[in-house]
Image (tube, rainbow, N blue to C red; front, side):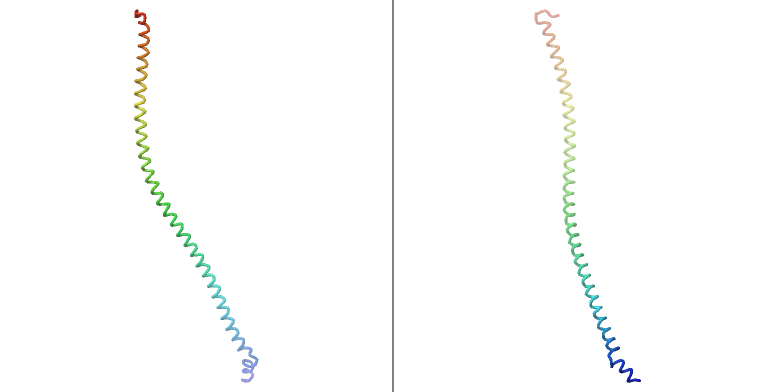
Amino acid sequence: MWFEVFSIIFGSGGIVYGVASWFVSKRVRNNNFLSELQGSITKLTSSYTETLNTLVDVQRQNSKLLINQDKLESQNVILMANQEELIKEIEKLRRENKSLSTKLAELNKTLKHEKHNSADCADGLCR
């Protein structure tokens, strides 16, 4: 009976070889799984690095844009102050123009009146 058990186990190599091949194939499967896992990790690391580099580039561009925005805001404040000064100057010139136009109209009226008076008295007789 023991002989039969030993002959089954060792004689034909069935069980021992089956168990041994199962251990070997399990190790191969584990190695393949680890290789695939390492490949996935490598791809993810590469993708992460690329994304991180893109993020750094975007942050650099954002910093430059913020600096330019600050400069433009400063320039805008100066331009707005200049615009206010120009508006005041325009209002002053409009008032001056209106005053001069009124004086010019009065002078034209006086000149016309003087021409009319001198024409009436041209022959020495004032009418």
